[in-house]
Image (spheres, rainbow, N blue to C red):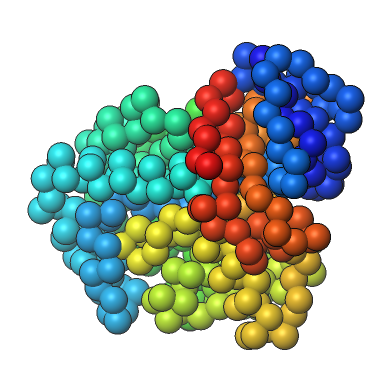
Length: 387
């Protein structure tokens, strides 16, 4: 048992700042109270305690080719099966892939991320590589698999169905690349089986204007419309929303993940974050491909607040932005699989203790903090001390 004492804590799903103490026993928060002091006392005077981060979208396998493909187009870098990433992964040694994944997970851990959702290439073998890499590490990977049988205009549906069942035996869900590579029939097979087995289905949508126009021309629907019609649980990017996409997302139960740094690196546009927030959509944030960016969510947060200010003339509420990396997912149906905790009694103890440099606790984290400002990361029973 221990107590985090004398800090400003960002409490509950709305990150309400309170000067209270947190008592932890057996990895769970058993009391939050100004006068609570039990067990080992960890004095955090002059600190801010935030929930740990969720990295909502990664491709951790391409940790082995950091910064390769810079300046190439989206398709040249990541489109299966011949993108720079896919060619590199197919030719890489398993031990090198595992070592690269582990380095990236340690970077996430040291910068406050305890959960990440990964689009895992390589079928069953790719899933097993990430499981091996994350074994005994203090981080929770949510692994979404895929198979090459999904691709093409005339897939073998019997083979697709078998691949889906096999993947769901070992993964948390399925995430094909995008509608440019799969048919709606394959998409429906994926979402139906995921729903039957209570697993996550996710897909990239509207990452570039080109894929949106192609979808409209061929199907008279945007990629967002097709994803919602196919009942995907999560959509990633939404960079180039069109027509009624915002209204469709807002009125659905789909989880939206934004990847501002990756979209900027690939020069595919900037998601309309101001409109998304004003539409009462509660998105999450992800760093996307490790070959493009570090998985550091502090960098994602600072980049996003400044990007939105300069490109959309919009001062995003910093509390709402921090929720995108911490608690927004807790309001989504996919959190039954992710199990991301908030700071409240009876929740798992998963929080970060930051030095306080600013009177605004949200901007303190978003605009001022880096890894050297993290004093502790609490992950259930584990206390990581960094200062």
